[in-house]
Length: 177
Image 1 (cartoon, rainbow, N blue to C red):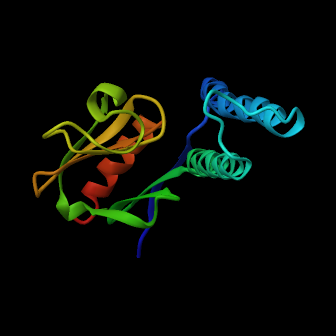
Image 2 (tube, one colour):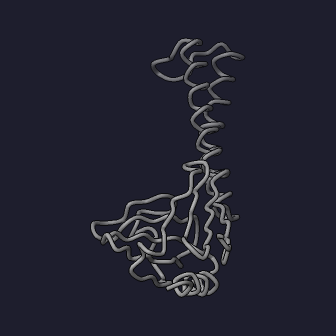
């Protein structure tokens, strides 16, 4: 029977991120509001090479869809890490809901380490690091559980609770050796 030794849920999101994303979203929104006012209220074509009203509305619609999808993916993302007496399981919703399972029999060694999300993995999310560094699943911070698998692959899982995750990994690996 599986016994849960550790569980952690992490989401993207912090005040600096909200302000940054708000600024990014504000630019096209303000642009389209000004352009819409000129094109539809003042009846003045917008720009040196004006687009038709239909083309303008289609472009505004597509940009809105892209912004909504990006916002949904960012703000609904959730990394779930679970350690049982048999395996370490991760899901990263909405990117994948079926758990990635790392059975203890496939783990050669592990450690909690500080890493550089941007220079090592290109940021946060589901990332493939530089050659030989492996894959990362992270949403914030710079502390992670580094797994060294028996198949020579490496996996880094970001955590906000490094000590508790390390204790649970040690306990999992000791159970029924």
